Image 1 (cartoon, one colour):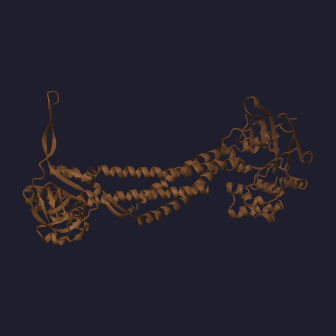
Image 2 (cartoon, rainbow over the protein chains, first blue to last red; image 1 turned 90 degrees about the vertical axis):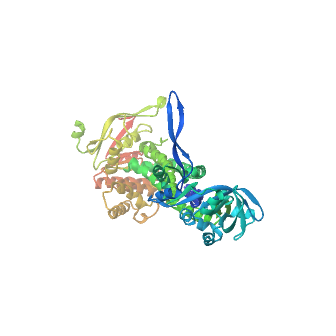
Length: 390
Length: 233
């Protein structure tokens, strides 16, 4: 029974710690992408479009996104009226070649922004690793560069660089360098003032998209549907944008839960074996209890209580072990650079990990106790005392 | 459901009529009880004797509601229980019957006192303090007052069987059913256990039904019922 108890303790503990890790990285990833790209992105206006036409079915009309946002400030103002919206920032996006001190890159992505609006819908302030935003705010030719891009071009804070989107090179100066932790962003993205971006990209009006922040990002799908209906512009949620990675995290979480649950399952099998042997060894004691007036239910309860005691002790110790292991893992240094950036294991402290682990252990232990308990309850005292019990 | 015969024999606390029981399966199936009728009366010690395999113990288990008859009926304290459901039979065992077997069947991890208290705890008629007092009283009656706290595993064979007798008496049952209660004991312990059963039965007006191979003990009982081939002879 001690082995079964140990199995439950380790099974519950490992379940918790693996869920804390996968959940932690998932939450960290979500925080990162919400902090860089926002919860919602409002893009092209939806216009009636002819989808298909034939003699049998007739003409099929629908809505298709076209032409960007013509009056971004008006749309942004409308969006800011939604209760769950924390802010809406106009973004003008375009490609440009960038040339720095030690190299160049023809595929830089220029983001024209209004700084205060952008700060309301992103963690840009917290992502600045060198320089500061005050300089950017004051300098019309100031720019914010991703850390990877700045490093590749040999640029530091205060250095000048050139951007060319086809209208000839224009000179800018690095006000600050930011690190979102997302490699794909940090190696291409250059933030400019919206006015400068319009000039560079030769787009005096309109916007590529609006970045929208939400108080409760989990409500993004419902808000997106409402905003799309009200503004007539296509709205995509962070869940749609990051669907692939979110699916990967979900698969990892489920996969690790299944894998670690096998430890609990093996402990349950051990417990079943122990209790089944106990029933065989204690048939005479069961018979005398039945002879002295104990019901079948009383007998079953003896074995179910044994299972319950192991379950309670195992789950309690397993939760403590899991919490301790989660804390220890969160202190382990590990350098992660890719879809996000972290320098130690990221863990999520969620009561649901403990509830799920306890529920899994409960199902397994009760199933493992139920069969021997039922078998014990079915023993006929007369047959046992006569020596014929099977 | 009370038979006319049962009504006529009002002193019989435990009765059976025309009991049949088969044991084994297919070719090994044997007709062990062949229409047995029996009555046990309060204050009377009855010995059932006979050769091995004649059906004595099978009859005792039927009377003790530990096994179900293939035919016939059993009445305990006026209630027909031969075909009753398991719950009714179990409750009747706890309230009206006490068992002493050839092997003591004590729970060895528990003390003598706890073993004696076991049936009382289930019945729940007394408070915990009253249960303990009665258990100590019973252990004193069987000469084990000073060994009440001792684990059953640390008692001698004779002492274990005396604890089993005390346990059988715990709920003041109307009937004590004893299957070779002295079978595993030496002469001195056999005499002690037998004398104890007889004395307590008479003092408390309990019926004692005892299966035994020992002719000397059988001769000292109030009634002796010899069996052969599944019938009383």
